[in-house]
Image (tube, rainbow, N blue to C red; front, side):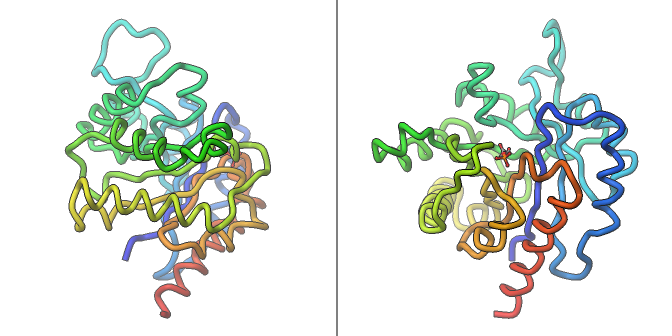
Length: 256
Ligand code: 13P
């Protein structure tokens, strides 16, 4: 049984004042065996402060450099994230791929560096609107998976997030059939490449306009082990119902 994971990506949002939201989230977390793991990836300026107060919520970075150290102004190494209290790092988010021209091989090199430091990597894949319209979605996702995930991974240190680019921050959400098709495909590719043991233990997150109102429906889809949530992870009043919907989905599965 894979433990569910509710991950928040705060992107370039949040200052010290917003740590109060994390306190409110802590107070409302579901309890019990089916309680999901909760992760927040704030801007780098907040990692250390958040990590000092957020338990049992885990804290992660939103990117890291592939090098251990050196002349890379403005960048952060995986060791620095770890030192600041992060346990996870998001890599290859579509906004990094678009804003910073990151390619699959860059994501793979970053993932190698992060795994070498003991971080858990959340590797993002997803098609654009044009790619979906040209019926190329699975080809794109397959290529991103093959190119972005390094060879040496274990199932507990790898999380894959499927984030259709056209669903991010738009309010548009794929149908549950479309999500199920891509998640099933990702699972199959992981099992084929890494073997059934590793492939079945990797958590697969859906991301893109997840809100309290659509979370339960999305979490009922096979091979959706949680969500990577942007806007709705910033406030406890939005993120907590999503976390609860995931706990409920876990309880239903355990009851089956
Ligand atoms: P939204 O939930 O704001 O659509 O963002 C999704 C996302 O990009 C998470 O990484």
